[in-house]
Length: 432
Image 1 (cartoon, rainbow, N blue to C red):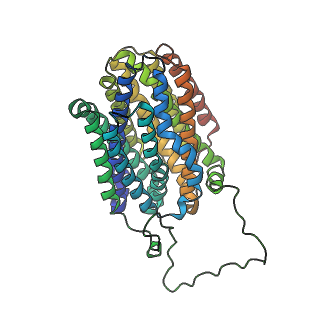
Image 2: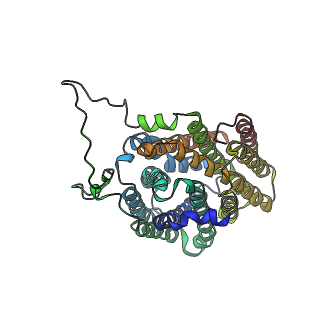
Image 3: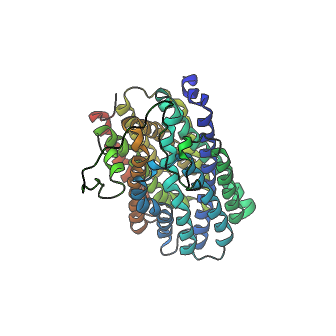
C-alpha cells in the first residue's frame, strides 16, 4: 500500500510540483494567522460591534476575486502554459505580501483587506492550473495516489505553517510573519521553474507572459487543415468566456456529484472560519493560542487520512464519501458541544481525517471525467462555485452568528453533513 501511494513520486516534475505547492501553503497559513491576529486585536477579540463581521470581511477579501474572475479565467486558462501561470501567480503573491508586511501597521482595516484581496487574485489562476497539470505529470492509474500525495503535502504544509505561525507571531510580530510568507512564495517560484515547458511551440512574441499552450506535433506528421468556413458565416462563440468550463463541469452526474463533494468541504470551511473562530475565541483570550493547535489538528487529521486512504480508494467511492461526511458530522458535533480546549482539538482532528478521502475522491473523479483540453477551465468553474458558496455562507454567518449562537450554527452544519452523507451512501452517484 505504501509503495502504491508513493508511486507518483517517481515522476521528477511531480515532485517539484509538490514542493512548490507545499511552500505556497506554508505561506498561506502564516498569512492567515497574521491577519486573524490583526483583526482580533482591532476588534477587542471580536467582541466589539461588528467583530464577527470582520471575519466575514476577511473571507470576502480572500474569495471575492474567485467569485468575480473565475468565470473569465475558465474561458482562457486552458490556452495558457500551466507552469507559467503558477510561476507568475506565486511571484505576484510574493510581491504583494511583502508590500502588505510594511503597510499593515498604518492601513485601516478595509485598506489591509483590500490589499489581501488583490493578492488573492493570483489564486484564481494558480489553483486550477495546479489541478489541471497533475494528469500531465503522472500516469492515469496513479491519479488517486497523486491526489492523495497532493492533499498530504497540503495538510503537512498547513500543519507546519500553523505550528510555526503561533511562535513566529509571538517572536517577530505580524510584519516579520508576513515577510516570511513572502519568502515562501519566492521559494515556490524557484521550485516551479524546474517543471518542464509544455512544448517549443509555447515560445512566442508575448515574452513568456501567459503564453498560449499549443499541443505538440509529432515529427513527420502533417498539420491538419483548417476547416473552410462558408463566406459570411460567423464563427460560433460561447455566450460568455467560461461557458465551456461550466458546461464540462456539469456535463455528467458523476462530475456534478464530485463537484458537490468539494463544494461541501468549502461550505464546512466557511462555517469553521466564522463560527469555529468565534467558538475558539470564547475559550481562549488570545486567539492564536487555541486557533493554531486547532488548525494543526485539522492538518494532522488530513495528513493521516490522506496517507491511510490514498491507495485504498479504487472501489465503493460513493459509500466511502458518505461515510466520510458522516464522520465529519461527528467532528462538527464535538466542536459544537465541547467546552474543553482538548476536545476542540480532537474535534478538529476528526473533521480533518474524515474529509481527506472525500476531497481525494472528488478530485480524482473530476480529473477522470473531464477532457484534458477543458480541464483547466472546468477546475476554474469549480473554484467559482466553491469560493462563491464559501463567501455567501461566511457573509451570512457574519451577520447572523455571534459567540452565543455559534455552537447552534455548527450543530446545524453537522446535521446537514449527515444528510448529504446519506445521499451519497444510498444514491451512489460516483464510480464504484
